[in-house]
Amino acid sequence: MATETLEQRVLRLENTVQKVQEQLAQQQPPIKKRGWRWFVGIYADSPDFEEVVALGQEWRNADRPHDHDDEKAA
Image (cartoon, rainbow, N blue to C red; front, side, top):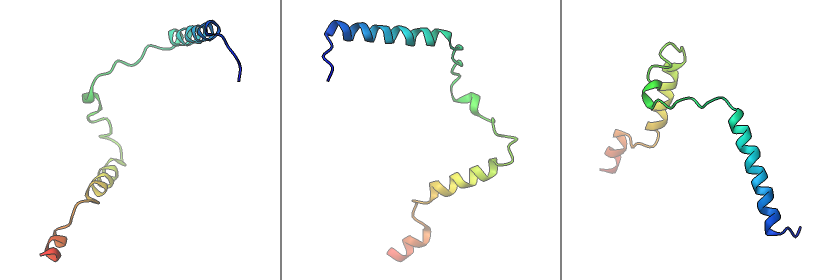
């Protein structure tokens, strides 16, 4: 295990933070968050949308008890 002094560790961390800040400064500005409303209708013209909806419904219903399960318990 390397025996780094506290000053050396802090200097190394400061250099790393400086590099990260420089990289972030060179990036494109982040996309402005618009909330959930921008998403509505984004897949309206997608041919796979109906399949996605059906698969989502199937997944949500997988853990729900079925009507005939209640009749067996009675």
